[in-house]
Amino acid sequence: MRMASLRLPDSIPSPVQDSERLNQALQGRGVDEKVIVWILGHRNAIQRKQIKDTYQQLYKESIIHRLQSKLFGVLKTAMILWMNEAPERDAILANMALKRKRKKINQLQVLVEIACASSPDHLMAVRQAYFSLYECSLEEDITSNISTSLQKLVRHDRELVDFNLAKSEATKLHEAIEKKQLDHDDVVWIMTTRNFFQLRATFVCYKQSYEVAIDQAINSSGNGDLGSILRGVILCIVSPEKHFAEVIRASTIGYWTKDEDSLTRVIVTRAEIDMTKIKEEYFKMNNTNLDDVVRRDASGVYKSFLMALIGEKI
Image (cartoon, rainbow, N blue to C red):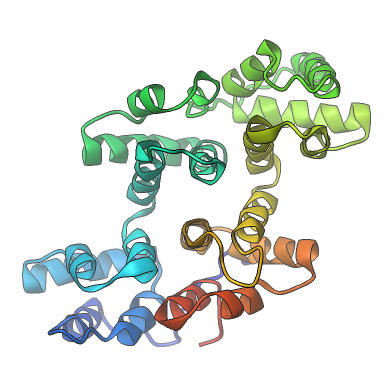
């Protein structure tokens, strides 16, 4: 099954041809945003890397720096994220979330997504990219910027599962949820020290034992920000497409998009991973197509760019 939503043209110009067209579009005061979006919005990660390398060779300048100086607003934010390779992109998103003075749930979600909806290899690459970009480890910035409950989320995963432990910890989680004590030491310990595979086994045991998915049980317990974060952790592990569909829904409540940062983040980071599944989950939740929501809520060339990434027909 094809899970990425990005569509590529049948015939793709060479990196030299793309670089030349992009350079023309970026000349002078009148930037041709439509050309930039048409080219970069229909190139995969390998092709974008080739364009970056070729542009640097031809013009002795980073195309990312050029885009930063010529684009504005949400289109600039989306395009710069798109043009960075995945580890650098996630490192940038993590740093943006950590450095905000007032951290809301939608910012902390970024850390949960990186920690829990990524492979161990990608997570290691993000750590390395973070240190390279900011001369500080991701763990150090997490420790100094967020509460202790989230500090252990970014961790190495090993494929070791103790099924007896999963069953006993499912019981502990159930007791805490029933008592609406999501800040209980047992909950924090389980959620921040167990690896991806152990947690997934625990969540399966929970559903088998109590006939309800643990994310639904937490949602029913109504425990504010901590409940939202824990539910995000769970969904990123057991059903990332559902988590990202919910993030998009929350970002587009009302007639106009309320949270462009979250909408941009999900579409840019998942377009080459599982956006097709996210779109399917979004339709199940809302009985409407994500394409229609983006057409309604976004505007201008930014809308064209998002539509390209979610797979609008070429």
